[in-house]
Picture (cartoon, rainbow, N blue to C red):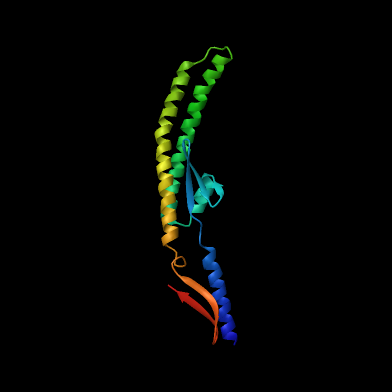
Amino acid sequence: MKKIQIIMALLTVCLAVSFGQTSESITMKKVFGGYQFYQGDKRLNMNQLVNAIKPNEQAYKEIRSAKTTYAITSVFAGAGGFMVGYPIGTAIGGGDPNWTMAGIGAGLIVVSIPLSVKFNKQARQAVNTYNNGSVTGSFWNKSEFKFCFTANGMGLKLRF
């Protein structure tokens, strides 16, 4: 009798662990200038997205590359925005604006656009890899495993 109780306890623990590892897929919503990422109803920022994708090794490599591109894009776009905005603010304030700096800033913004497109493609690919891996890689999604009572007593039922 103790053997049966031990076996049932181990099966319960194993099932709890295996069902705890299933993950929700990540969805992408197209917005102006790129995508927003969601897992369930929760919106993910870049660090949360990387952490969510971490269990899938291939998708994790892809999202790390996308994160690097994202950081470079942010630097170029931020610097370019400042370099364009500062002379415009100076002109509005009545000062003598440095239009050369505004031109260089516009160039940085133009450089950041293809980098942003590259990031969007890399992130989309990483999310697709993650979603495909999480759906097809799970044994429990394809089969049914139940604890049930029968005429002879308790049992486990596995249906493929």
